[in-house]
Figure 1: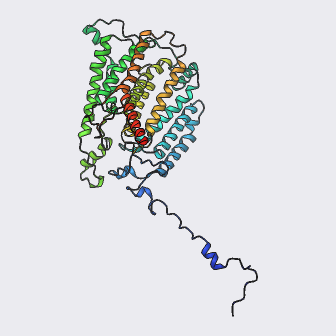
Figure 2 (figure 1 turned 120 degrees about the vertical axis):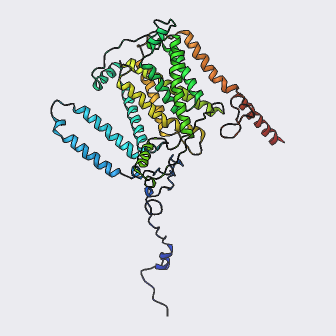
Figure 3 (figure 1 turned 90 degrees about the vertical axis):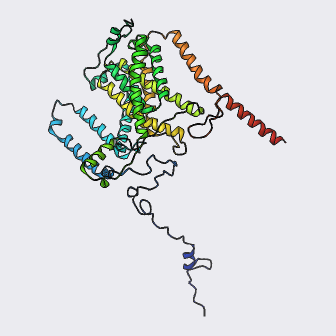
Length: 468
């Protein structure tokens, strides 16, 4: 005898067994981290960003000194809040007559830099610590935001704002011309030697560490002197004697800094890097030496720009040359427009900041150009530095209206026109040597007109093959 049917169910209603079969199985809850293990505990974890397919520079952290790489985000947050609470509620700060606005601005800057150190992405450098280069990126971003703000101010308002930072500013400065007595004598040369000669040498020492290429630095050194010739009608301090340009600057100061910088690069290039864990080192002296070497490079990459390999490399080299020239010329215009002495701390801080920002930026650009399989997009340091130099140019162009009434001489216009024409002509007609390999091992390709001819011949052969 069959079981009585449920009167509430129609003949077409699903039974409990059918509901069990039709109901999808519940998916297991995802485990935190990778396979249940937090990412920071797995040094070999794959940290590829799936939405961009970009691999960070550091596939694994350098934990040879374990103490420096322990996660301390919550600890840093607690300490920062404690310091903030103490400073904000101390009677010494809140008493009448104190500059509370300045203290508040410093606190906001410190809070932003703390966030940068903890939360920004890592760059190409790990020494002395990735957090240091995150702070450099944070300072670059703060400087960029300040430039964007003053871009919307007129020049007189900007000069008044500078007095909030330093009350001694806001006064017009006399421009000095160095081409008054150009007789080529030992006495005149000796009188021209000043603190700026040391600044030239130190500057080119830093540029050698950034660019790591003799020819590139020499081209940049000569190009800057030509730029001084071209702009001395606007800035009188660009006016120098011929021997000051080519002997004192290029052949002595620039060459000395460049030589020492390239020797430093060669030392780091051939150095044997072997980083042992801090616990595996015995002896107080050896441990101290290991901690000090934390401030040396973890490894060193020699740059071979190969500007004549193809159009991509050529464009990158020309762009880098233009950006470096702009970065060199911008502070001269900014200090002239904002009435700042060359040795003012703001000017020196800007130069030091651009040097620190240029180190990882050029390294990222080099990898983006020469290893596109790993660097799918331009790095954050090089993007931020390009934005900073570009915004500086916009500020200078806006404020320069009416400040430099003297017109550009016609010979300067013709000289730059010829230079620009040659820059376009070279990649257009260049034919590479068929037996000259590039630094990657592959043969050098043509670019420009030869490349277009080869492309046209290939397309013609394909069309004839299809027609047959």
